[in-house]
Amino acid sequence: MNRRQNAILEIINEVEIERQEELVAILIERGFDATQATISRDIKQLGLVKMHGEKKKFKYTQVKYATDGISAKFGNLFKESVLSIQTAGNIVVIKTVTGSANSAAAFLDKQDFETILGSIAGDDCIIAVATTPEEAQNVAKTLKSFF
Image 1 (spheres, rainbow, N blue to C red):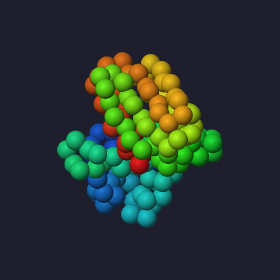
Image 2 (image 1 turned 60 degrees about the vertical axis):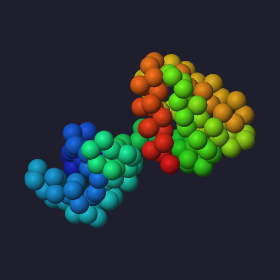
Image 3 (image 1 turned 180 degrees about the horizontal axis):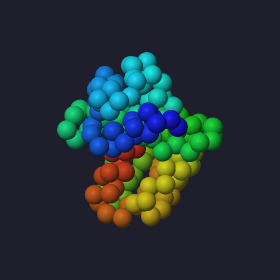
């Protein structure tokens, strides 16, 4: 990872960035040589995705994929197999296509959510227990951003 990519991660943790042009402008202000094309490549290499923001409609955030190729496959499988994500108290309920809950749960487990105490997968449903109802909402929001 280069200095510019480190700066990108710092920026997206400090402010909500909705468009690449915003990121380019901030990087230039901070003394980096940046174009939309270079930022686009950096976003892909860093595994950044857009999710719903609090101040803006969307914001960039980093996906915590592990570095092995299997994890990327799990991410794609998760995206393709999940039908819905809901919370009930401190529980996150993830409904999947029949037969794919275990694979989707493997992706969930690789995310290393500190606030998930554990998860159980059946044939078409995953139940993940969070530390609090608020953390369950945060996990659900993050998981929904993978779609």
